[in-house]
Length: 183
Image (tube, rainbow, N blue to C red; front, side, top):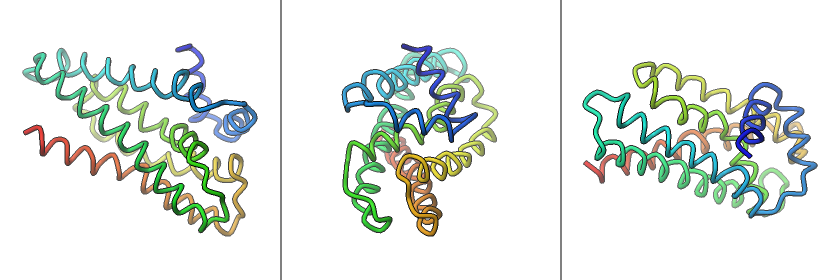
């Protein structure tokens, strides 16, 4: 299972065109998506957040590791859900039908760069410059808009901009709120 997840992430980053075609052809229901991709990815993020907060952070301890893990999971899961709901609600602007599960799949797979960064950043917290790689999400969304949704070319750029901004900034807002509440 983890091998498949790792390969999906690598394919979406390295060859999004081909990866989106495969994802579109898969007959994946909501439980399959959650149990075979999203929840295991969040489990990996929780594990790396805990280990990073415990051993790779200055003055790391169990309390800090647990807080970091909780904040990261709420940030990502909340960001995923809120973004999917917003994109579902604005889908009419891009001539798409409201299909919440389809948008959840799209947002979940489109966020692989963010998920990858949350997996590796606990070990390299001093290299915050790596967060600039999150901009690559726009390319993954752009390719997905054309392949997965087959959005018309004149609306694809607007969809990409709106979706990418939501994918990147909703988790930042949730993270800021969580960090404020925890401290």
